[in-house]
Amino acid sequence: MTDIAFTPRKPSFSPLRLQDRSLAWQVGAVVLGTLFLALSSYIEVPMVPVPVTMQTFAVTLIGALYGWRLGAVTIAAWLVEGAAGFPVLAGGAAGVAHFVGPTGGYLFAFPITGALVGWLAERGWNGNRVVLAFAAMLLGNLACLVLGTAWLAVMIGTEKAITFGFVPFIVGGLLKSALGAATLMALRGGKAKPATP
Image (cartoon, rainbow, N blue to C red; front, top):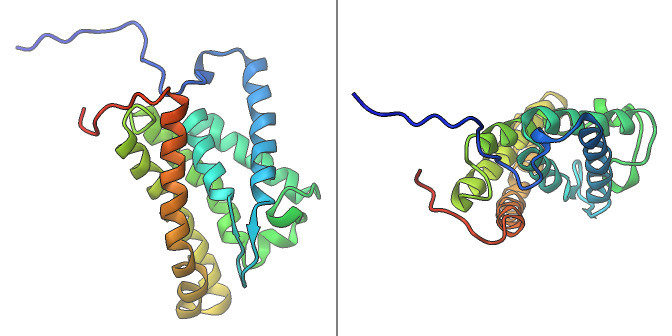
């Protein structure tokens, strides 16, 4: 028989501790999160048919800091802003057309990506364990690429979708995952634990 120590509260997975904050704090976090996502959309390298932006960095970081529920809500709110005509998408774009064009699959994948990274962060894949944080970010980027490429394949065919919608983004996904993990560690004060529990 083993002794199990029960703690009254689960330790916070994020330095923001949004799960412990009031509704007003959480609403404010959603607003700030959508602004952060909008700003990340303006950092862009134009490519055809899908541009390279810092959006996936922002999406995964919001998931890791906000958790899966609030992260997905924040990302969905940003997408609603874009669909409603606010210039918050890549390069300041806006409108429903972007949700049915080549970038649509990536856009719809963003809330799923943020939720996945947030879910993993809540289970310890966060700034406390930098290797696991990197793995969570990488899985998030991979999920976004797979879903976005699948959408693109319907429009231009599988081979072209992989060539233009997946392969060019692999290195960027690795770099943004490393940057995201480093950002989480920095927000934690640089004190990361080993990857093993």
